[in-house]
Amino acid sequence: QVQLVESGGGLVQPGGSLRLSCAASGRFVSISDMHWYRQAPGKQRELVAHITSGGSTNYADSVKGRFTISRDNTKNTVSLQMNSLKPEDPAIYYCNAHFFVGSQGFGYWGPGTQVPVSS
Image 1 (cartoon, rainbow, N blue to C red):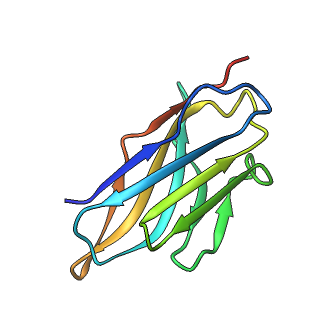
Image 2: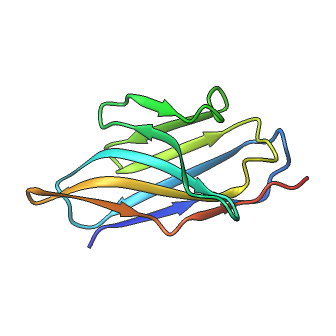
């Protein structure tokens, strides 16, 4: 059983910073791409940031220059440093990763962590 668990969510004010972390556990061979998504009330889930196993990154235009995704392959973790938070950033943030279990690949989601931003 593979699991992803997010942590680090919490209330922040606009302009503030927050760091989210996601830890993978279970039985798997390796992790390839890892992602952070978010879903605000009444909106579709959207990709925020993506990082490959080699460390290449991509970001949604709305967070470029403010958010930084990183990973530690030795600890099977992925983090999202969020700076200069805006009122439009509050959402539930989800970690997603692609795992190789044996010879097969599977995508898994974490349960999400809430990031509300106070006005």
